[in-house]
Image (cartoon, rainbow, N blue to C red):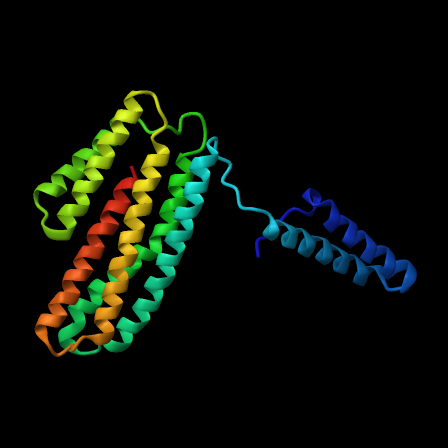
Amino acid sequence: MKLANPLSYPLAILAGAVVLVAGVRAANLDSRVVVPLAVAVAVGGAALQKAREPETLHLDNPALERELLAVRQQAKLLAEKAEIFRAEANRLLTDSLQVSLLANVQYACDQAKAVPAKIDQLTQRFRGSDSLLSVQDLQQQLAEVQAKLRSSSGVAQAQLGKLADSLQRNIELARQGQDARQAQVANLATLILDSAGVLQAMQNQLRSANLADTAQVLELQSLSDEFKAFQENVDLLTTQ
């Protein structure tokens, strides 16, 4: 539970005052005991009230705020699932021949764990009057996606193609003077959901695979590479 300033919560101050008066006057307790108790009640009450308040990001666009809150929740769930998967991988991938795969899985989980913080950083950049995405920033993102697209194949290529199309539409929005942030967050939400799907496939494969079978281990490796590609695209959209 996060701490909150009791002065911002009159009911918490009132509760602390009641404890103080009741302790000193009604119960005749030593003020050296009652005062810390009253302060604790006020601080605890303020924290409880703060926890019950709807979360807000203080953005200038309510629709964008709703989208970001939803994406942040998705990112937290992805990070939690990644930690569960990491524990399973550590338990199952113990053979010396599986060290490389385990390292890739751990790296993928580290990437997933970092996503909520990246969303928070993006939220900070989306605050204020100068927060609108510029055409230049979007063009830089598109150029990086197109460069990766030329050397990709399979699922990664399809995902990059979709992302390139979305970025092109966002550039058009920005050129027209419209706010492209919400569309950009929608792209991010798609990437996180796709990442979660790949992570689940990796977990299912790990649980059912014959880890002595090279072909099945290579399939796990392929899924790990796919997950890494999705996370690199998340980085692209959150760190520019």
